Image (cartoon, rainbow, N blue to C red; front, side, top):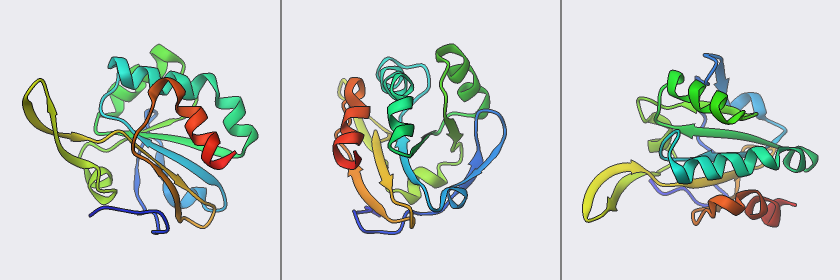
Length: 152
């Protein structure tokens, strides 16, 4: 199912890199930048996460909570967080229920090889749980600027 702006963001509950249970419900009343990325410790995903890390003060100034999600496990997320000092929750979606609920688990192609994977996408979810913006053409090195341009 393809989500669109104006839809209610699908609720989820899953563990972050510390084994802490994170639920989208706990952020009601806050603006959430929910960024989905394909894999921990890969070049483009690292650039994206580090851009958000380096600009976390600006995002907080705009009262934006950052949450990352990939299908990697808790242990992988913990290594990624520690290696790059990431100051936000990385949610483990090992069973792919969240990526499927958000409609971003899809066929991809790399070097002519087709495979299933996560489409790099960020959902900007408003205080009432409504998807206000969807960034499906993420520029990893400028991701914070993309978010602020829509929500600044």
